[in-house]
Image (cartoon, rainbow, N blue to C red; front, side, top):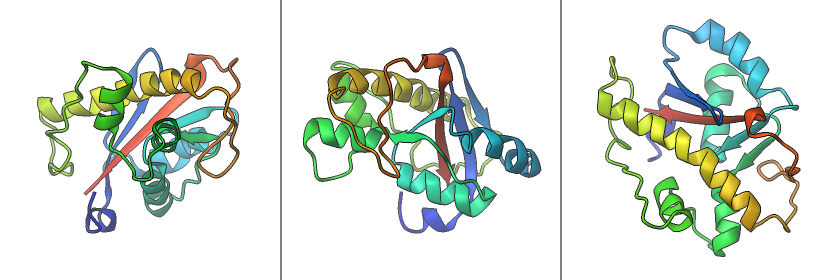
Length: 173
C-alpha cells in the first residue's frame, strides 16, 4: 500500500473461518458493519488473525470506529520466525511457509472501489483470507515456544479451536 491508499476508504472486508470465508462490500452496509461487525471484532473471546494489522487496525478504527480486541498479526509472527527486520507481504510469507505454493498478487493494486468485483478480484480476495489462517496455524506450531503480549502479539493457547478464529483483511483505496 502507498501512503495515498491509506487516505482512501475501506473498499472490501474479508472475514473467514476454517470452514468458510466472506467478502463484505462495506458501501451499502455501513450501519450493519458499524453495529454487527463491531461486536465481533471487539469481542475479546474470539481470536482475530490479521496480516499487517497496523493498517487494518487504523482503517477499521477510522472508517467504523472499531477497536479490534484479541488479535494476532501473522506478519509479525512471520518476521519473528524468519528473523526479519523488514515487513514482508503475505505472498512471500506463504511461499516460505508452503514451498511450491505461490499466492498470486496480480490484483493487489487494482481499484477495489469498483463494483461489481471481477471474478479475478473475488478469487484473489478469497485466496488471501483462506491462506492466512493456514499460515497462522503453521506458524503457531513453528513458534509455539515464544510468548508475547502486546497490541499486535498475543499468546494464543493451543486449545483454541480453528472454529473460533476470525480472519480479517481489508482493502483500502
